[in-house]
Length: 121
Image (cartoon, rainbow, N blue to C red; front, side):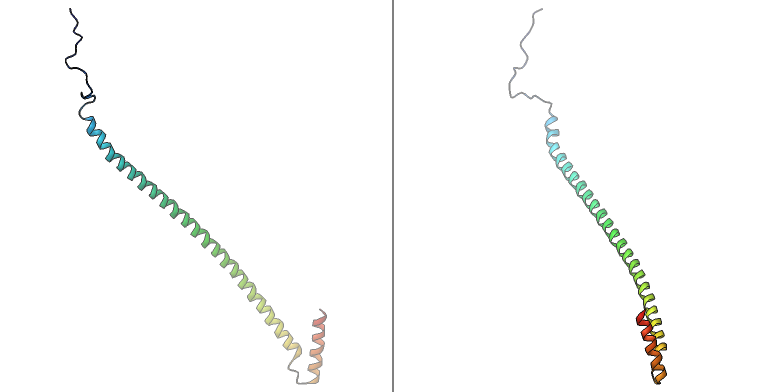
């Protein structure tokens, strides 16, 4: 049996190397690549915005927690100031009682004695 080494068509560069449906898929890849790029960009922007929002929420909570602590401390300071004011008022009343209205000489001498004892302490 003789071997037929000649091909039915001669090889040339103009002959198609791939099936006819591959160029259509190759062209559609450009659209898919653009769509994928846009999707990745949208997901990245969404992730960035979510992280930014979470960071700001944490920062807001920390600031308000600090404000709550400061108001608590201020409340303590106000209570301490009120207690000091009551003590000062009580001391002033005690001094008024000790000094009297100084209408008589005896009250004035008692006031001087009270003043000197307070000054020594």
